[in-house]
Image (tube, rainbow, N blue to C red; front, side, top):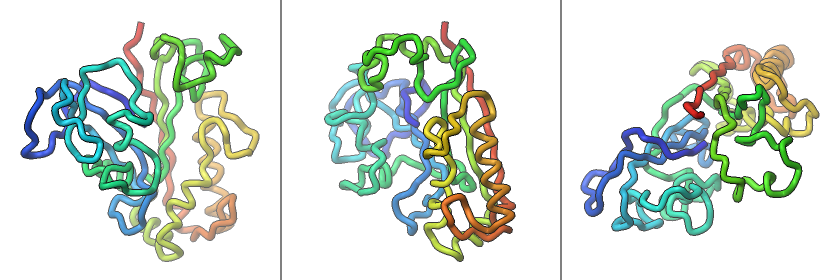
Length: 248
């Protein structure tokens, strides 16, 4: 999850050139690239300070990126911010999502993170507008949507799955990758990985996750057949929160 925000960001020490702006590129993700990474299977946050101009714009370095040409999308080929938020697992000159030095662990117990939108009409969706308003392709392309911004969004819902250190240690004893593998068994907001139970009301997603935790704690197996010590599953908790947007 990545967005531009008017919050203080991180500027590398010794960086020169250009004027700092009051804007930052903020992003949250669970690291899944390398089990030797201290942040592996943990929620991390980035607040990359942005400069107004492009004097330090170099996609192959950790220099601050320019912000003067807003509005524009964050991701995409040729976008200067893309290397910092791309979801690949390959470290390209220290600039992929797995290697950007501006990420820091913010939730050491969080191993699964999901977000979705609560619209002003009460509809829950993984798109920031109501796609039922228009069935034409012009509302199906997230890369080129109508100029509506977030005007239809009332809140952003966030769900997290948290495991305590003892439970994580039990999972690591099975496999260093088991925590990330288990995270994959928690369905996304919409697709539910083919389970056929698309989230439609508040609490649906969280209840699906809770059911998985309870079943795994009883059987020692996740829905995909992963071996999970019951005592590890018993330490997992599901939390959610809605963040209201100040929109008209």
